[in-house]
Amino acid sequence: MILMQPIDFINIFKEANNQFSIIKKFLTSFGFLEIYATLIKSYFLKGDGEMKIVFIEPMPPDFHIFSRYALPRLGTIILGTILKKAGHQVEVMVETVEKLNYKKILDAELVGISAITSTAKRSYVLGDELKKLGKTVVFGGPHPTFLAEEALEHGHFVLRGEAESTIIPFVQALEEKTGLEKIPGLSFRIGDKFFHNPNPPFCANLDDFPFPDFSLLNGQLGNIKPVITSRGCPYNCSFCAVTELFGRKYRFRNPERVLEELEQLNLEKNDAVFFYDDNFVANPANSKCLLRLMIENKITPKWTAQLRADASEDEELLELMRLANCFFVYIGLESINPETLRAYKKQINLEEIRSAIERFHKYGIRIHGMFVLGADTDNLETVRETAKFALKNKIDTVQFMILTPIPGTRFYKEIESEGRLLTRDWSLYDGHHVVYRPRNMTPYQLQKETFKGMARFYSLWQVLWLFLRLDFISFIYRSYGNHLVTRWQRERINRRYYKLMKEISNDARARLEDNIRKTAEDIRRYFKNLRKKALRESKD
Ligand code: B12
Ligand code: SF4
Image (cartoon, rainbow, N blue to C red; front, side):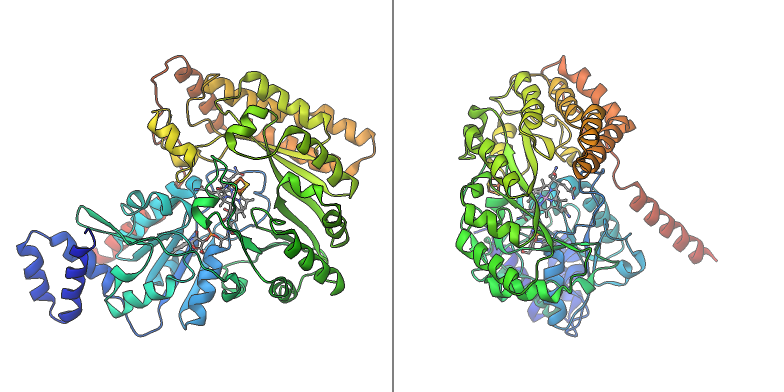
């Protein structure tokens, strides 16, 4: 039903796109001046088959454990590659790789902004400023996919979900000034009304996509090269957005194609590969095939990957991983509390976690253990015991994330419906801040104990102990962790957050502002100066 109205308008535009005045008269007579303004702006792009397009992945609000490395998500680069192949001029700006190049952004006809929840706020400021200057702005990525109406306050379109099959039809529709209503996953707004086309299907064959062309990136990718071999995950953990984004069915690339991509990366001695898959060994036969190909073809850079603890049950796989030069794995261990593991629907138990740590170590593979603290089944003791567990079981590095209700997840729906969200300042949704009211402890206790746990794991005493044991590699990792935890706790905004947590903890109904952290002052300043300059020039 809701789609009928825009179809009519779009057809009107199609038939009479050279008769601006008639359209305007028609729309304004029905009080639709805003529709006129929005559609005119978004529709009337150059349309000569070659568009200047800039994709932007804004930077996170704060540093995190991977901040030292330039790690772009692959979405904007793959979409850029597809558009470049179709004849468009594309640039990809990932702020953690290089600062924004405003000149190029202002020269673009279409700006695509990719946002996860923690970068949404900065993305929106950018969208607002570009919109004011008449740029067409489309949002995509995990956060706008689930909160499209919110994103439409700051841009003209949201292309939800996987966009490899929709990006070309979308750009074509913009050029041809027709057909937006047919693009799956597209959301747009006309006046006060929001229109959401049906979801796009998940791309069935990942081998249809081109290899990401990193030459589109402004700036240089560092020594860590991202490659992804699969999408989707059947597990559906309550706090994770992956299944909603990429489906509950695993889809895999052909190992031969992955090998070809690795070859094309022309890896140098100091380069390492980060397999971005949510679970790199979801299909062990496929992974083994890839690892054998890597070994046979002597393409064995150092590599890391995310995987589940139960992967360690397959010793043949572990041996192949070792031979193929895997040096670190990131494992979502999530919790040491069996009840919480069940609540998360992690489908793994504590014994499996312990034996996974031992087995990976037996094969010389280090472990980065990721824990998520603060579930309704957790209490202060769980948080305290987690650091002890990590130390006792000799996990190499850890990340204690505070459970975060990310839009799109079951956990978000639950917490929101129960009125337990403390703030909608998305820049705090980075796993390091308590943004909801936990059940068995106060927000302040959760915040404090999580960092105490991290500080304990990365304490100077632990660092020294590793040094004395001549375990220099662990010493370096742990020293770095110590530096990060100390730095985080010293930051002014974080100290202020502790204080706020303390204040609201005493009042069960208190909420925090939605605008606690500034994340885009530099962007605002740039555009303000630009406006001032334009005003000065117009006066001269
Ligand atoms: C690699 C990765 C990282 C890297 C790099 C992160 C970065 N640059 O942001 C590291 C390890 C540093 C990391 C850290 C974190 N990550 Co992370 N990460 C990933 C991972 C595993 C792969 C990303 C990827 O390349 N995917 C493949 C590409 C193809 O997908 P994509 O980029 O999303 O693009 C597709 C669509 O989204 C869409 N699209 C994307 N952008 C755009 C833009 C436009 C204009 C359009 C039209 C379409 C579009 O089209 C693309 C093609 O289909 C994803 C999970 C996943 N499977 O995606 C999590 C994921 C993105 N991370 C997530 C989170 C929560 C985090 C952390 C907050 C966790 C933490 N505390 O450590 C931090 C925050 C980092 C930050 N930037 O602030 C969540 C984000 C959910 C959300 N709504 O916010 C995800 C989805 C995982 C999850 N469990 O839910 N992460
Ligand atoms: S946390 Fe890992 S296992 Fe759980 S749904 Fe997300 S990707 Fe799958």
